[in-house]
Image 1 (cartoon, rainbow, N blue to C red):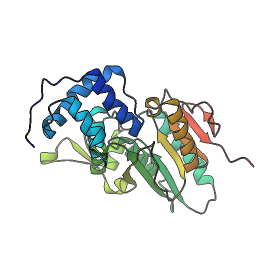
Image 2 (image 1 turned 90 degrees about the vertical axis):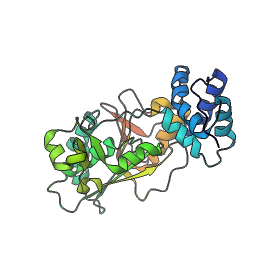
Image 3 (image 1 turned 90 degrees about the horizontal axis):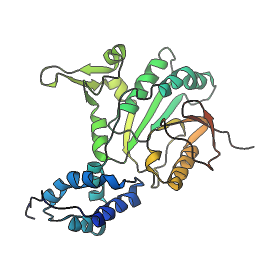
Image 4 (image 1 turned 135 degrees about the horizontal axis):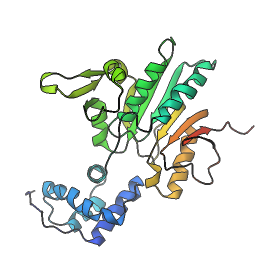
Amino acid sequence: MNVVCAPTAELSVRDFNRIREHLHRWTGVRFEDKKLTLFRSRLAKRLRILGIKSYTQYADFLIKHDPDHTELGIALNLVTTNLTSFFREAHHFDYLTQTAIPEILATARRERTIHLWSSACSTGAEPYTLAIVLREALAGHAGWQVEILGSDINTEVLAHAERGIYSAEEVRGVPDNLLRRHFQRGTGTHAGEYRVRPDTRQMVRFRQINLLRPWPQFAAPFDCIFCRNVLIYFSPEDQRNVVTAFAGTLRPGGILMLGHSENVPTGVELFERLPKTVFRRKAPAG
């Protein structure tokens, strides 16, 4: 296929609607009208790479000729912005260290493994922050292990997360003492880069998961799930479905962390609300 430059191709409202509705149908992510210009600029390089001359042809290709959704994933990677940082919304990590983890350690449960899920992990700052927090909190508590799942729908950010390498700007939220203990500082051609140390990295595994599609079978229920600043992009029905599904994967008494502007949807009575968007899974009735 010949490569065709398409810098002047226009994205009509009709084709914008076709593309964003297709993405929403498969991912649940809603895109506002004002995103038309962003779609045009970020998808332009796909037109060039594929040799497609118009957005109408691209919409046809995306909707009708992408049976395994490979192109859908590429398009989603291009038009979504993944904002994340280490220790973002720090009160949630404070709650873990001051309340949730001591409560877990005080239990007499046979399985001495703490399971956590960062369900929209982006480039990995959130699950690696969890790993740092848990390693620090469990120092001196022999026999306890931690397993953290980091998931996202975006394969590009998952690849970044799996590498575990960050710029000085990306790790600026990490306190100096924790930066020294949990990161290796690059030298030479890698100066200015920080790699998560192996002992911390091995606590986290990554997997692509679409929260609105059937989830994989999890080996054990979670003690804590982070799903911050994600529900705001979903419809009310999708929010209820996702939060209800989270409840089914949490231990009774397990914790769900939502973003600062989010809440458990109306009609979902499975959680007890605690301060600062922390929600505790209620024990089953009876």
